[in-house]
Length: 94
Image 1 (cartoon, rainbow, N blue to C red):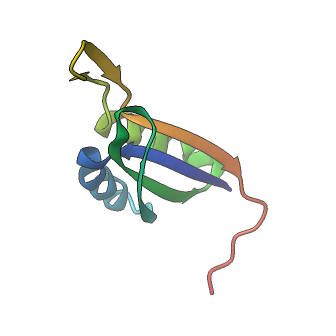
Image 2 (image 1 turned 45 degrees about the vertical axis):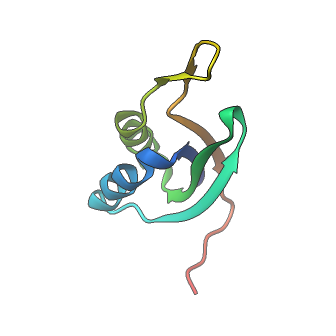
C-alpha cells in the first residue's frame, strides 16, 4: 500500500477530488499555502493499493496541468501538482 501526498492548485482540487471519488479513491483534503507565488494550495492524502498507483497518478495528471502566471515581471510556468509517494507499512480503519 502507498500513501500519495498530492499538493495541487486550489482551482484544480474540486475536479480532482470528484474524479478520484468517481473511481472510488478516498481522499483527505488539507488546505495549505506555500511556496512559489504564495498561491493557495490543497494537499490531498490518498491511500492506494500498489497495483492502482498508475491509475491515481494518471487521474492527477489529467486534472492538474501546468499553467503560465504573470508575476508582474514575466510569465512563469507553475506546475499542476507535486506528488509524493510513500510506502505505508500498515493501514487500519477504526
